[in-house]
Image (cartoon, rainbow, N blue to C red; front, side, top):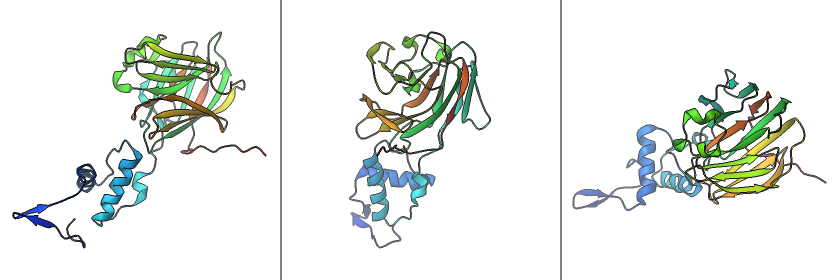
Length: 249
């Protein structure tokens, strides 16, 4: 760190560093572990890069590219099956099932997209919910629970019924708004979810069409989750890490 042009200041025989403590500690973490620290906000990442530049520490941007999302086999209901790549979920069961994805959503991993194919719709129920859940407050046994009280601190879009559902940390519904977004009628759809860490908002997309902001006040580090109700079909995680908007002339 002191081998570059920046010479250390001395105070009473000790090195004196007059820098922002948080950014400096992130640099120390980077030097110790050779990887970027977990940064919740985009401005924290910018401060981190500026601190590296100040100390003339080499840094390749590729170290902070978005991670590829995948389904989490350790947090998947027994009514669902995951392929070996952890990218495709299949279902052939009348019972619903919940699966979590990884990593959590933050300033870097801020967009996830799914290719949904339904062969047999759910009978008299919605087909699919997509949202974010506080995994630390969730119990594995609730992956096949049908009660919202068992899904605390969650933000879900009921895609085929165009309904938003939000629960507090006790699983009590504190928001239920009908008529959100563009109703899905096709049995094949591309559904995207974007998290903005600056505004703490969640937005949804259907087939490249922006459906508007759905939730605000959503904490960083929430886990993407699917609550699957269709009886037979599959969901594949797309390789897209950014939304490809459609343009109509």
